[in-house]
Length: 533
View 1 (tube, one colour):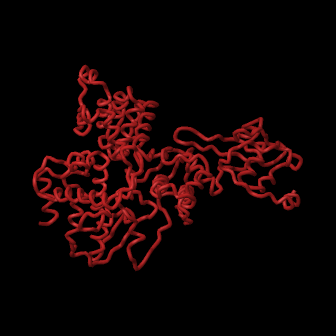
View 2: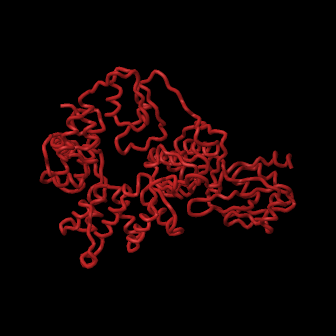
View 3: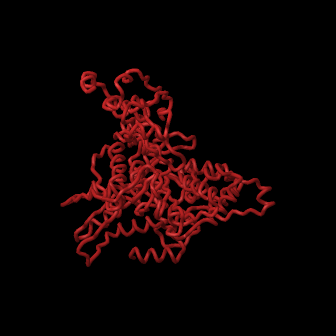
């Protein structure tokens, strides 16, 4: 029987699911192997198998480590891996069967019937060449199907946009034997300013020194440009997307927001169900509050522990999507029903009619916007020294850097960066400083006080030229701007900054008591400086 016929059969039997869920697997685990932790491990094992080229499930598909019920990392031995692989194989065998079942653990998934197709070794006839886009995020199973075809193949992708490793995707651009490689280093989406930000992320975070060439189109990366056309606010997590929706609709209840993927797919109904589960039984009965989602409703039973049982489930199964929804419920608590109603009323299905477009980078990949604002939930890095430590120790998953790179390269004209991107730019020597006539600066800031925190120095009005720190605006706030004294400039760009100082004041100023944030320590060549002055 062909895969297409099988798929039709699964549909007819109502035996199709989008994914295999640990909650479903929990109910079919054998005695002695119960619990949500093992349910998660078995689910991961089946998913890893479906993404692989292998014909049967083995111990190699079992995770090499997982978090146990106590929250500690556990490393299963060979015997335990064999048993877990056997349990997963039994479930897979029942998934494949064309028999009706009430157990959702035995429902076939989309990745599952793609796996069945791969195992059939299909031959696609009538093609001269197959064009494989997004090759950096293909699973081995998909690549096995494509590469087995007798015609030519063209693989297209960007290794720095690989963001689906957690689903078993591998970068085929690095693993598939090839006859020719062609590099596209010019973007037709944005100009040199945004191209510089993207190239800086690759340089600092991944050690990739590649020039990314933009078009002649002028751009702005300070968050101060004219936000004409589509304005997108891109986030790492759904929690941040929800928070931005709350912020925008509170500031302007008439605001029209478009959520990438649709407001229904965002999961507001499930968030509301979790909120209802959180309420005491008396309140649920008194206000006639019901839970629509069958999965969430299941935890209302005493034996599953209610709201706290749901939290334990999310922790034990490392269900990050559910954890995000729980965080939203706990953060907004009593206000949640009102906020959800307001988001629904402000939702706009047509992105061209929306004031703002909200979404995660995963959802926005492949899209482009006139203006992009990057929220501050990607990485909590407070200084360039932190980034150096993370890069040198290899603590940051490559996909996380790729997500940041994908976020900034969605912008066409205007980019509003976050603090992490700001610090990355300082590491490549961009401090957002601009020279200006001191007389002009004095008109705007008569005291000529340095704007750097903890610095008490002032600019010398006798110097014809001084430095200004340009305004940089984040999504939620702005960075300090204004005059910068010679000592602070020198600590950032080196001793050439002292050429702007009057000789009499050159050594009279005291350096500020600053953090190591955005500083470069460069040696001063005293002989050269004296000769120049």
